[in-house]
Length: 76
Image (cartoon, rainbow, N blue to C red; front, side, top):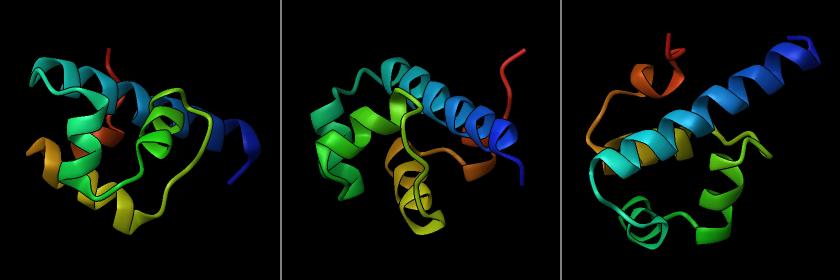
């Protein structure tokens, strides 16, 4: 995967995590606890700064009560 595609995927994932977290009225701290993910990592994921492992992505999806595919989908 080229770097531009990887960065676009990171941004999409982060934007979707943030959007859904807001829709569910969760703070970053609440999502952090529910997904067993460090709050700084949640912040960096939402900002599109880092990629995360598939395992961590699945834990975040479960904490948000959505499918992993929804976190990877482009919002159009």
